[in-house]
Image (cartoon, rainbow, N blue to C red):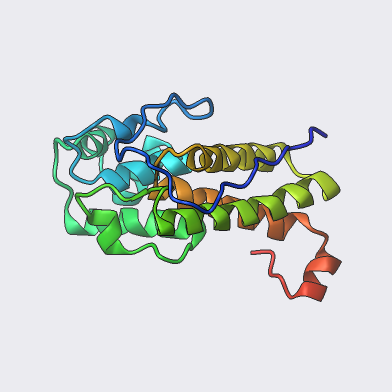
Length: 202
């Protein structure tokens, strides 16, 4: 099994970085940074969630009950979704991980939600992600993990490394990275160990 190496934890200090989102090229998902360069998107957090989960366009269409052409136009900011369509999409991404702090207002906001690593809140979030990744990587290296889970971990580590290096990431990227790390830790450690610690697998 290929061992996953940990990234060093960032210093808990403010960094004098610009508030411009860096245009970095993703090595794991070619759609990942598309949201950073497009300014006419009406629902940027919807697009960010779509990119962070890796759902297909067809999955969004099935849940919103719209055609692929209409769904693509909504993502491109060329069509306005109906309220019930947005609620169904919100439920889809909510069911993806059940992560707290995921509100309908955030989902529908015209402002892209980001994590800034040089603010106190951003520093705290980076450390929280680091702690979760440390547990998940230790569990994966000790007890093994599926290829799918290893890929999820690598994507989560990539998000943390961007924060560590002073780059902003979308809130969607952060929350899914954190959820993946927590979920992999819970499901990787042996059941007997989970029972002793009172950790639920799901």
